[in-house]
Length: 362
Image (cartoon, rainbow, N blue to C red; front, side):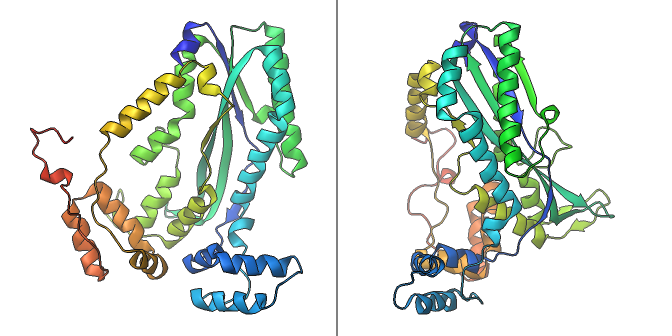
């Protein structure tokens, strides 16, 4: 963003949201999830759903249900109908098709000298707090919102800035209201940021990456999705010295959030953004350098069948393995898996622990 700063460009920083609502975490087992992802089962379900089933569709669907141990003849829609999933779909649709639809975006680009935009989705969970201070992850208010940074060449006069800002906010509130949400113009935030402050803005809207790395928000009073995973794991001690047990509801909520965001990009840019910002070549060089020097350490390997077995009968082990791999040694991971009885293969190549400190690992 330094090139944008040196060129004297300005940035419009927006936050789009709608009135938050509380929802229950749906019951959706790993077996049901595997059932829904089964290609043959999905085809059979679609055939029956459209009223044009092929021969044996009902039998194939029933056989798949029995294979995965799902006690129903059609896939569960709990995940797709979850309030958070619908909200994310609606928000993304309004942002891309109403606020920044292709025709309007071209007009805005020419009229206001726009170089590009970046939008980032953020989710702040607010579980109900029980009398003892613990979190009730069965009842969570989802503060879902989008941060958008629009980069403009040079500067606009006050009249143009105000008109453009009101237009974008008006498109959002109108579009999201048509989908049944309550969104007032006052609830949206819009700020014009000087060139010298653009890096601060970008650091703010990409703070999710810091939460991924550190597992917590920069604001200690704000919960993140990682707090659910922390509650799910348990084993922590509260302020009074009592051991906090693992919370199955937190684990269920985290799994649902995983599935909501699976395959979706948290950050999106307008077409040709990096080239227009003059950083495309530098980013390509940085990615090439990272791939050249990055180290991937294989701690252990499961066969495909073993991993599916773990997924179906002991899904909690996946979170325990991840926690151990991130915070313990390889031997600790081996001990954990050996205690469960699952077969695995140790790596044959050198691991980081095998490389002396005074030698280059490349």
